[in-house]
Image 1: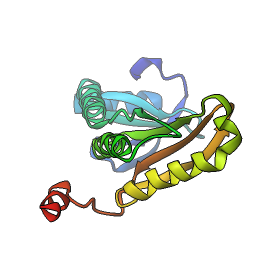
Image 2: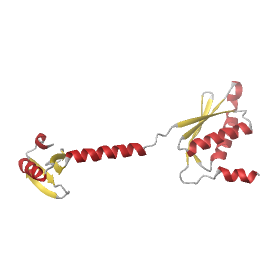
Image 3: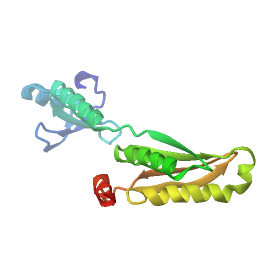
Image 4: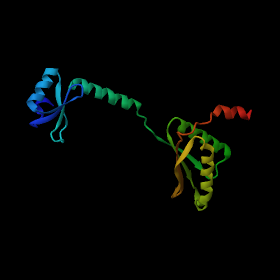
Length: 178
C-alpha cells in the first residue's frame, strides 16, 4: 500500500475501475493523492504489478460487512443420529422415523445406526431389511447419502434432505387416518 510498493512501475487502475496504463510508482502515488485515496497493490506477481487507486478504509469496511453477511447466512450442518435395533417394533420405528423427518426438515443429515446384539450379527440381511424399511418411510423427503455399511456390530446409513422433492405435509396424512 502507498509507499510500501517497491516496484519501479505499475499497471494502474483508476478510482472508477478504468485502466490508466503502465506508469511509474511516483506518478501513481501522485494520482492517488490527487484523488484523495490510497494506492493498493492488487496483483504483485504480475509483470508489471497491478495497483489500484481506492479508499482503503472504505474497502476494509465493505469487506468486514461482506464477511459478516456471509457468516450470518452460513448454516452449520450437523449429523444427527437415530439408533434402532434389529427387533424394533413398528410403533417404535415410527417414532424414530418421525424424529429423523424432523431432523431432515431442519437441515441436518441423519445417521441411522442399527446395533446387533449377541448372535444377531450373523443375520445382517435382517438388519438391512430394517434399514430399507426405514428408508422406504422417509424416501419422499430424503436421499441415501451412504448405503448401509456393516462395521463390527453396527450397520449404518446416512440420509440427507432431498432438495429436489417437496415433502408431503404431515398434517395431510393425519387427516387421512380419521
